[in-house]
Image 1 (tube, helix red, strand yellow):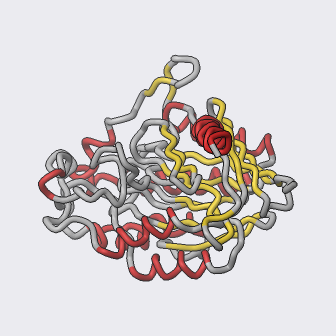
Image 2 (tube, rainbow, N blue to C red):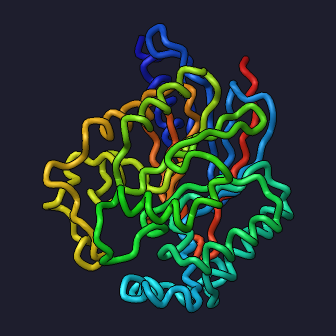
Length: 331
């Protein structure tokens, strides 16, 4: 018995280093998967995957270009229009700009002939008509298969009256809509070589009942899933500003609403639906990984059920994730 316990503890230690999975929890089968990370390269192996696919994903480019059409909104865009004009490349340390790295990232995706390009929000520092049209034209010319989900800055004009939900709907409809290519902006799914990619907008920090129902419906298909959101989900040890689903997320802990000139987080904190959504993703056995942005730092959390949750560095620094999903043989 002592030998068996020793082997189990050793296995848990190996899991914490490399990523692994067990075959079942009780009678419920758990998808066998493992993953590895090296700089911006992620490889995920899954027993449910039958083909190899490559996804290039990024977030937080913070494009700010504008023309005369922006003049009526300059009182709302002034701070963010000067926030990331010149940035530093995360690899070379040299100066770059959001528009330059956006072009470079799209070009890398073309050269790699990726199966999917995923843009996970805050591609824009505010809903600049010129910047959105420019990015849309670049993507159209590239002829890439891509998905997009909004970040909290993509639709936010700082100081403009209105709730987060209303402002999001307004500027998605007025400016961002072409980037969704006909999909529902708040939630949709695309299939890529047998893997279903779920794109869900949590840029208000909250999840709606419709989004929760959509995710649960997709989970029941049994297909291997990937989840793309802008704001990462809270894991123990992460601060209240880290992501969606923190038990202390509320007005008392909102340190940014004044500088961002927006409504503060609610007094009562997250809705029960948002908290349930977080529980659902942590307990969905066919979910291979969760990818997010928002915090401008590279992080990795792994749940008790071996679900990796990746956050990338900001694309304005030239960063992107090169993700490969591969079959895993089951012995």
